[in-house]
Image (cartoon, rainbow, N blue to C red; front, top):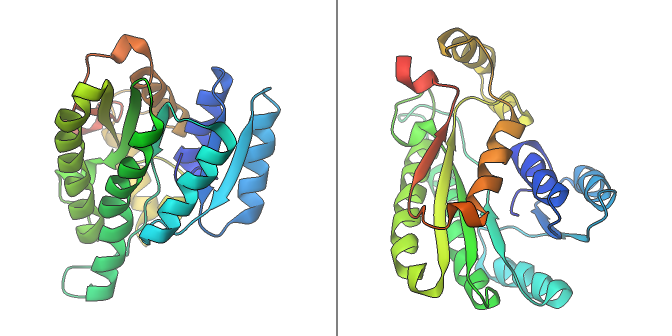
Length: 240
């Protein structure tokens, strides 16, 4: 589980742990949140390790999966959730911002999948976390939106290539979720107000809503779902 110390990643890690999975959570800087998440997972009676790694660097990706292999010996599920980005308009965005976002949001999931596949001895599940900005134009979302569109393309290509190995690859695309990540957007309050008013039933999406869908894609019941992007947004995109 990349980006597993908080927000959607934390919810997914805890959901999988509650279903009996041992978990490895990757994070970048927030040691306090990672320790807290690890403790909550271990309280469910499963094993959990936490590994800090900057996924934009291939050497760090290798370090992460070496730790996973050393602790568990194999891997059944990879969740590519770690994401970053700079919220600026196209004219204000700098090249370094573009490269940072693409490296973490698009390149890293590919590198992580490359490293994970040799550990998936009897098939496996890969789930990438995308967003509605991959196909819709959201304010100040250029670099992230393009990176998520790329991630969805990576999902399709990997799904076809890895199918003969019994590995399924899918993506879950979420609407606006009230997490710490959203607080970095200068228009966060407007985004949440729009999400609530435009979602049928006026309910905001939660990290747990995303987590349950991810868990389903990791189950045997989803074995024939491949290369798909499952939208979890409460129906918001239907009326935007």
